[in-house]
Amino acid sequence: MGIVKISDGLHEEIRKASCTMVRSINSQAEFWIKIGMLAETHPNMTYTEILREQLRLAAVELNEVGNG
Image (cartoon, rainbow, N blue to C red; front, side, top):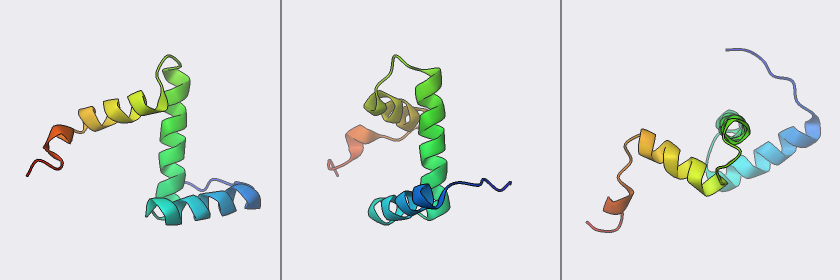
């Protein structure tokens, strides 16, 4: 684990987003970093496609939600 230095402004935006998304500040920053890396390496995919693919890789059964 390392330390990443970011601006105070970006930290504040991560803090606000983390409250909305019910994540810790570190988890929110990690999520944005991961999605950003995936977006850069898969420029043909939309944000929704990236999330759907990550859920598929994690074996999340989306078709089961609300059917039980």
